[in-house]
Image (cartoon, rainbow, N blue to C red; front, top):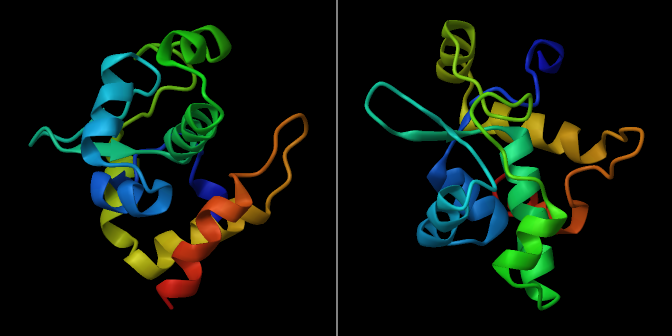
Length: 137
């Protein structure tokens, strides 16, 4: 199941992202406004986030907690444009897959991403998301 879901596929609504990151909707929209994340939009204009978006939000949160301001974060993290490879994509396939997946399946996918080791990158900030899986069984 996870093999056909790419890291930049639009899967998560803002409510799940808020629970995963402990950020408010306003904070998430602020980071979007500053082009640090680029979630996809449904035809109804709902934001949908990818694994990459969640990971970037957790990195931003970590930097904020260390005292880095938004200008410093922009220096550290390259802005994301809709045309970049890191931008969240909304395809017909991703929309169908998103509708097929239940919340428990989405949590399982996130858990697998947490455990995945990628060369040159840490997995999704492991301690940050562990509480989500423990509380939602």
